[in-house]
Image (cartoon, rainbow, N blue to C red):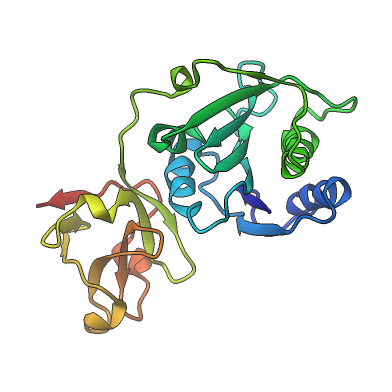
Length: 244
């Protein structure tokens, strides 16, 4: 299986162009659109979100990941990362940093291969998609393995990111904090509100703000049958404070 995680958005030609390459080079492999509205131009926030979404996939799934504001710059290398049971292909800009930090077994390769016709601005189509297709077949384009893979991990990142990473269709606000790191009594302080934890939406009156552990294990802020992001004026990047 090949899973797509990008900030391309659901409109425009870019996702279709990625899929065209994958269907041409790996026609028998299923493709899953995991996310195409990842935090735009923000590999750091996207890294915490990506790390929360992979566990539902089967072993050896190949994740084609593109959140790449530095595309075309020579210092931003294209890479392959094997974190425990999963493969990741994309830019070496921090997007795989959280997965790498949490992995028990880690391997890392710099992609040496380049196509004859390489766009300066669409490495997702021209490099990452062909490499992902090859990996889905159990093969690898020309790549150089990093023998000290953990040396590539950025050391100054938090284990969990106390910010709003993503706001969904309902206005619910996902954070980069794993709910398992907090106690049941923890309150979240944001926008002059103090939010208690509940198990599900109907545990609170309509329009009341709260936090819960979402289906990916992250702390999420919500209101029962209301849009918390609009009601409280929340946006991606807002800090979240915890009162334990």
